[in-house]
Each structure stands twice: as structure tokens, then as C-alpha cells.
Image (cartoon, rainbow, N blue to C red; front, side, top):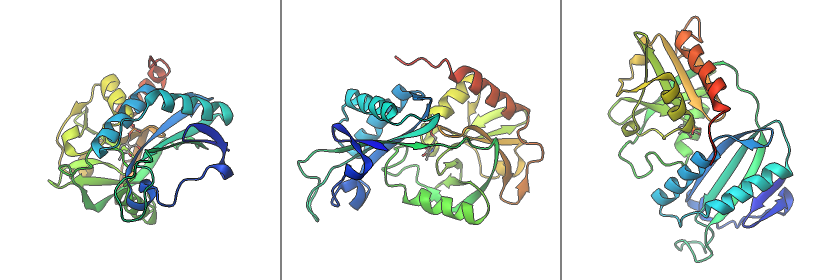
Length: 273
Ligand code: PLP
């Protein structure tokens, strides 16, 4: 396994990050996960743009996106695999304990892992914790993912693969690593970005191709939606067949099945500048 670290490709055993790296000590970092099929990353430009937005939100120096792009190409070249998850991590860099970010500059790591094809349907739960749509981290993809890790562990205990959050107003927000869509009276809806959810790249494409409306939704839509599905870079479109104790009989239903089909057909042709 060969990893990009700070300017060059290295064998994983030679890739060393300081134990005082701010990403490790205080979660001062941002990241992207990109699907790569046969060495070709999906929607890389959109991921790089979002990395820059997250970095700005965290107050990190702007990443050199040409370097990140070169790093992704090198890692994909150096680790051929049919379906991979490319992970770009960009942190505040290292500085002595107890001090602010030092002058050493940010740390950039790009790595690739094998990705399994996700099943077409899955079970989700809701969790008792809220996403703070007014918080400093709202909408940023940062390495401060502790809340997501805890919520996902709860989901796994309950035999599910994803947990859904409400925001502080009690409205539907998103999953730990996915956006959520619901079908009500035949119409497709997804929470707006003001709910505090991440501006998911898959969410934006699916909303455009399937004509979803952005709607501020109460949590009880999960009790009455005809269909529910999740989107993310590694899931694409994934139907929900169980939410908490409720089973959605014939998932994927017709609207979800159509969203899946459109995504599969059109994602091959998303332009990369
Ligand atoms: N919401 C959160 C919190 C995420 O971490 C992710 C992706 O990892 C998503 C939504 C889905 O975003 P995307 O479709 O860009 O992968």
C-alpha cells in the first residue's frame, strides 16, 4: 500500500505523521472520501472544491488543489484496484503540545482502501443526539467526527448500518455519513442545507436528476414516508428497508428504484474539467 504524505508517495510503513499533529490531538483537520472505479475517481473536482470550503471553514490555509489532484493520481496509479475509497486528509499540521498551530504548515495525506459494493437496501435507526445546525462545524467535513462515530456504533448495536440525526430544532438532518431522502405522496424530498447537513455531492446529483425538493421535514416523516433512501459517495443511492422498528415492505420502492437507475446511468457522464 503506497500513501501520499507531504509531497511524495511512500510505502505505508514509511509514512509517518507527528504524534503532535493537530488532526490527531484536537481534530483540527478536514477530509474527503472519493469513490474510485478502476483507478478513476468520481466527481473529484466537486470533492476538491468541498475540501477547500471545509478548510476555509476550519481556518486552515487553503490547500494546493493541484497538489491534491497530483497526489490522488499518484495514489490511484500506485495501488490498482477495481473499487476503491480514496481518502484525502488535510490537517493543521504539528506543533509542540499546548501551543497553537505551528509554522510547519498543514499535513496532507492521501490513501486508498478497497471498497466493498454496498447492498441495495439497509436498516437505519434514529439517535437521541442532535446535529447543531448553528454550530461552527455545521456543513463542514472535518476530522472532528466523534459524534458520528458514537452514533454509528449505536446503529450497529441495533443491527443497522446508519444512524439519522435530527437538528436542534427537531427537524430531519442527515446520517453519520450520508444524506437522506424521503418520498411523501409520490414526491421526493430532502432536508435543506440550513438543516445543518453536509452538502453531499451525491445528494446534489440525485436531487437534480430525480427532481427532489428541499423541504424542512419533521422527524415523524420517518414513520409515514412511503420510501426512504440514503445517498453518499460510497453508497450511491441505497434504499432503507427498516427505520427503527418500522419495516418498509418492498424497498426499493418505485421512486427509489428510479433514482438508483438514473444515478447509475448518468454518473458515468458527470464532466470532469
Ligand atoms: N453527510 C455526512 C455527515 C457525510 O460524512 C457524508 C459523506 O461522507 C455525506 C453526508 C454524503 O456526502 P457525499 O455524497 O458527498 O459523499
